[in-house]
Image (cartoon, rainbow over all chains, first blue to last red; front, top):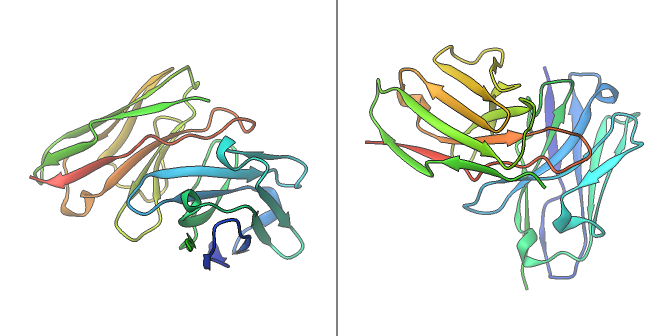
Length: 118
Length: 109
């Protein structure tokens, strides 16, 4: 059974940092593009970043470029999101999800809540 | 970046109704269009990919159509469990942002 489990969400002050993790199981992790998608409270979905199966390429939404870094450890079946210089606008539930071929986000984790507030 | 515009933002319908949601892309996305359903407090669920391919396990009352820049999601006979928010998403290229539409909330009339 495919499972994605996010962790690391917390309350952090503006300007702070946080590292999210996503533990994957039930599929060949190294075959899939992986992404982070976020959803601010009461708002819509926003794709944040993705990473190539071998980790050699990463892409970001403009609003997080230079602040967030997506990475992966295929040996540990894990996806990460390092978030620096957090602002109130980054408050959201962060989901990890996977893509292969023509099929976009077919499995999602349960999400982890990041709250940026003083 | 490619912008995705959904309409309507809210839709009131009754069980048994045929419902159509439209999604327009700011430029051609070559059918790289997906539809998701989201219920409160839950992760989104993939319904349709590549504009018209039904994801495994999704009921056949859901269908997608369109090409280029204009796409639709149709629910042929609305069921009680279908009241939710629906999002379109373009995934035209890995090297550019994969944008979502703003969502369409399907409410009970």
